[in-house]
Length: 165
Image (cartoon, rainbow, N blue to C red; front, side):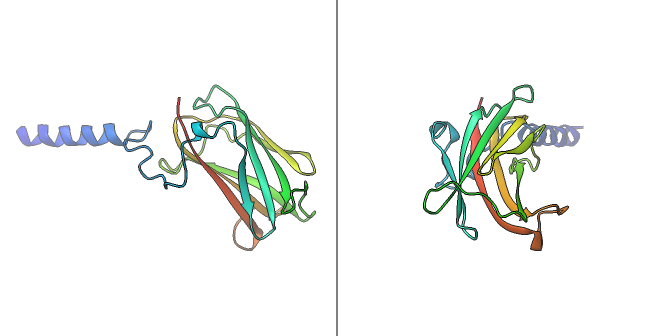
């Protein structure tokens, strides 16, 4: 009986520490060059697309909110190396992929990523489902392809942030 109680206690303890919520060691695996999002929320984040010579200027319009009931949204304006607004060539398109690396899943709803102007994109109706570390990948892919991998992936950049309540 004592052996069963010990095993039950260990199992319950492991379940508590590995449950889907704020990570037990949240932030401990974050590289030192990447700081907490709250320190940067008024800044525009630069996304470097080295192969294309393009810089994406990322900024939040709403949020981010760690709740599946509150809409978050962001915009990205693209500029060339000289700082002039630029657009992709016709055979390329931008796609986004959002993931919570510590949990291995994405948000409740990744929203709608749409082109507003030739150089400006907005992602709206985005709903995150919890606090923690998140990464937004912006990929440049061949247009109208099913996947954005291998030869279809032209360039990629990402933005890492930690979201609290």
